[in-house]
Length: 635
Image (cartoon, rainbow, N blue to C red; front, side, top):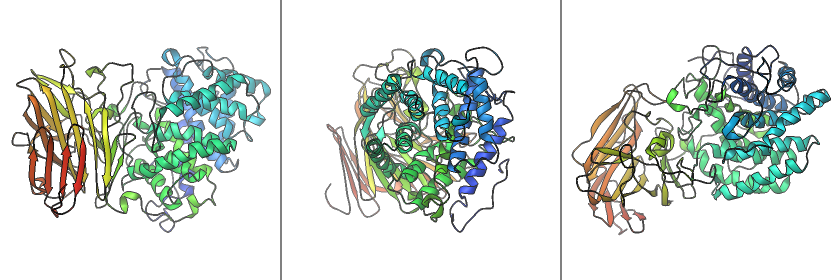
């Protein structure tokens, strides 16, 4: 699908993989801004983009349109050292003056006031984009505003410092507001307190290997890059704070060691976690690392990843006919969204344009594009801090994420099936598939069925992860939570282990404490009938003959309609269930039944002998330990 504004000709000399250069990035930013500004109020304070409103209401959505596009304009103009051929900053200066003239009023232009996150909180999110935009463009916008407008803007922004954020990355919004106020000589004890509080929380949320939890629980997702790394690293870069840059930059570097592998050869990021409608914001951490030097990646790899992600969505219908980012993934897709998503929400994708802060002579733009990590070799990478296992295959360019550590359950919350979230609860995600929608059969899911009631996975308890040469594993346990009747069966527990080897996924589940007569089902990858993909699932132990193929009529973010392979088997007391799964481009890796030659399983361990070279995998329980040896050596 062609996009609705002109781009320069592809440059296959400097960018052999994507054809995109810095000029393409500027053209995309300008095109997105021009399309969005068609929907501004007369004074320019609100951009009321067409579409269904978010939970926060139309006025907040209009502020969101202003703030998030302002961030794109700020990166665009600041990266050009103030050159603003389209006059974007003049528009935002006018809108800032109109929006802050009488905030809280129900008129055409006034911005909503910032309140606590559970009262009227969304403006706090947008305050960070306004503040960061003002900080980036201070020499060309802020310094030329009337003093009264500056005072009004400060007073509105300080609402973020005086109200309670949501208990997660939201604490970085007042941090960012305070950083801007201090940068223009308006700091005080209030700004210092907001920044110190955010720093303290970041220390508690940091779990190692470059991964922050998004709050006090175990939510690991794209917010790690586009929020929890972006704000403190960029703040340190802009302020010249060497100590902060060293601390937060080292963590960004560690994050990119693994995160660089989480983009497919087609440029797609993993379809995992919430707010996926922000799309190519997933590349923000990659470009930020290149900009600040806190990266293990060469400039050519960084640009390959960032430009690949941008082009992936532009080429696959992310823009509407009038040039707006739709609410969805490729095109519109309701199941991808959250209740807080409104018409302008996708413009958090503006964070990707942090790449433009690197000037034209920066290596990010002058180096020749190099292959993405997935294009270099098959790799399996364990990330024990987050409980994740990444599996990438060079031949088809697909990256898979096996989730044994991330959930969307806060520490104080009970485990209710009503809160089942397909973007966290499934056991595997990829760059070519999305989870099936609520109400359809769940993909990549182990369910225990007791007296006709099926379970979901909510809180995930990691049991370890590791990798070796060409293989890796991750494990976790959970308490099955039921969708009807009593929420839990006392003593019922599922331990799950994934071993990735080449294109294969060995999936092992030990179900303990199941009532007599229980059954288990396990599903594989959801794919569409027109997709050139193979989704295979084969039972090795503890399953009835099969699998059968189930239908998901609501499809996924990647296909309108999907089919899902499913195994089922008997359970009761303690039972062990072993299967092989695979997701691959056609024609696939061949019959899964031929991939292993021997399987031995009981309640204490599972042993598998692989057909290719006779490698052996051994999984022990109590505690979980996994070994994998080549040839005929004993594991």
